[in-house]
Amino acid sequence: MSSPRFAWWRVLALTAMLSAGLVAGCADPEDQRPAEQVTGLPDFTRLVEANASSVVNVTGVSSLPSIGGDGENGGNRDDLWRGLFGERGDSVPGPLLPQENDGSGFILSSDGYVVTNAHVIDGANKVFVRLTDGRELVADVVGIDGIGDIALLKVDAEGLPSVSLGDSDEVRPGQWALAIGSPYGFDQTVTAGVISGLGRHLPGQSRQPYVPFIQSDVAINPGNSGGPLFNTRGQVVGINAQIFTESGAFNGISFAIPINYVVDVIRQIKQNGEVRRGFLGVEVRAVSRELADRLGLDVARGAEVVRIVEDSPAADSSILAGDVILSVNDIPIADGAALTEALGSLPPGSKVTIDLLARGETRQVDVTLTELPDAAGTEPSRIDPESSGEPELVVIETLGMILRQGEDGGVRVGELDPQGPATLAGLMPGDRVLSIDRKPVKTLTEAYREIARIAHNRGGKANDLVLFLVERDGEQRFFMPALSGSPHDAG
Image 1 (cartoon, helix red, strand yellow):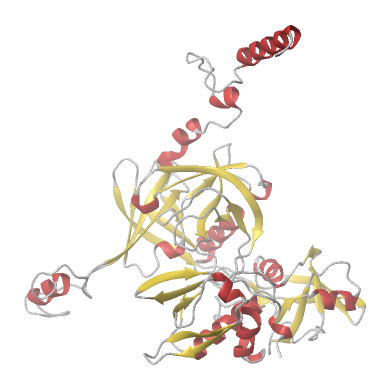
Image 2 (image 1 turned 90 degrees about the horizontal axis):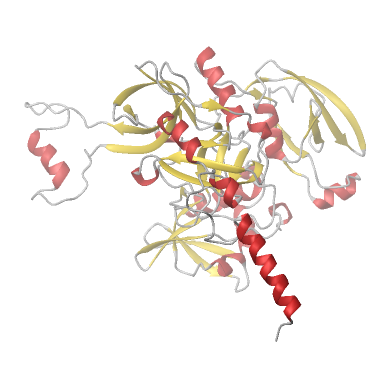
C-alpha cells in the first residue's frame, strides 16, 4: 500500500498535468488556441485554406478519331459503336476509347501558368485544367522536360490564385510537409508527414537521372502526381512525382522534385522553349571499397571513368579511362548519379574544373561542356550493359536465378538458388516475367540485359531492389528481390 506522502505527491503531479492540458482528453473544449499550442503537433488548417484554391486537377486526353457519316477517318458509326461496346453492346474496351491521364498541378502565376508532371500529360492530344471553382479550362502546353518530368501549361485566365515558392535547399529531414492533390480522383485531398531524406536518386531510374529527389512519408497515390509539396510556411518546396511501392499504392515512401530544380527548368522553357543540359562524355561507375583502398581514399567516393565517349569534351581533354572524378567546380562527387546531377545542372558552354585521382595522384582538368545529345533521356554517365560482360552471369550472380524462354514466347523464371535473393523475395520457378522495373520484357535477351543495365547503373550496390511484375496462376504479382553484390565481380 502506498504511503500517505507518495499518494500526496501523485495528487500534486496529476493536478499539474491537468492544468497544463497534458492529459489526453482533458483539454478545455472552449480553448480556441491553435492545436499545435495545445498538443504540440502542427495544425495545417490555415495553410490549406490559404493554398487549396491554387491546386488544380490536370487531365490529359487522347481524343477519339473523328468519324463522318460517309465512313471516313476510321469507319462508320456502327463501327464506332462496336469499337466502344462490342458486337452486341457488351461492355468491353475498344480500340477507339479515349485514354485519360489524371493528375494534379498548381497555379504558378495569376496569369494562368500551371505546373505539373510531364507523365501526367504524356501522349495527350488535349489537356484540361479544372479549378476549385468548377471551371474546366483547355490548357496549352508551353513546354515539356521529359528527363526532369516537368510540364509547363498555360490557361486563358487572369487573376488566378497562385502559390508561394520556397527554397528547397533549406529543406531538412524531420521537417513537416504537406501535399494537396487528387489521388484516385478525390480532389483537394490533404496528406501530411515529414521529410525523410534529400538528394535521392531512384533505383533503376533512367527517366530522371538529373533529379535529386526529396523523400518523405507524405501519402502520395496515383492522381497526386504533379501536385505541390508544401512546407509549414505554406511555400511549395517540391512537385510530388514518384512513389516506391510493391502494390502501386502508397507504401510509406514518396518522392518530390525539388522546387529549385523546377524553377530552373521553367526558366529555360520560357526563355528557350526547351531545357538544355551540359554534356561531358564519360561513362562511369561508383568507386568500390576495394578500389578506394587501392587509391588510398578514406571512404568509397567518386565516379570511376570506364569509357570516354568519342567526339565529346572528355575525349578532347586529358581525362582517361580509370581516372576517378572527385569533384566538379569544387562540388564533391559521391557517385555516378551525383556526377550526372552536377553536369546536368550546368548549361552547354559552361567551363568546369574537374578534380581527378589517377594512379595515386590528384590533378585538375578544365573542360568546356557541350550540349547533351538528343539521345537524351539516356543517362550519359551510366555503363552500357552491352560492353560490360555477359548479362546472364550478372543475373545469376546478383539475383540467384536463371530465366528461360517460355513455350508461349514469354520469359519464365527457371532455376533458383534456394538461398538467393529471388527465392527470398518470393519468386518461383514457372513465374512469367511481364516487366522489370516497370519496363515490359518479351524476350530472354531483353530480360537479361535489363537486369544487367539496372545492376550496372546502380554501381553494383548491394541490397538495391529490383521490381518484378510476374504472372502466376492467372494473377499478376509484384516481387522485389535485392541485388547481392557487384556485377563487376561476376565471372
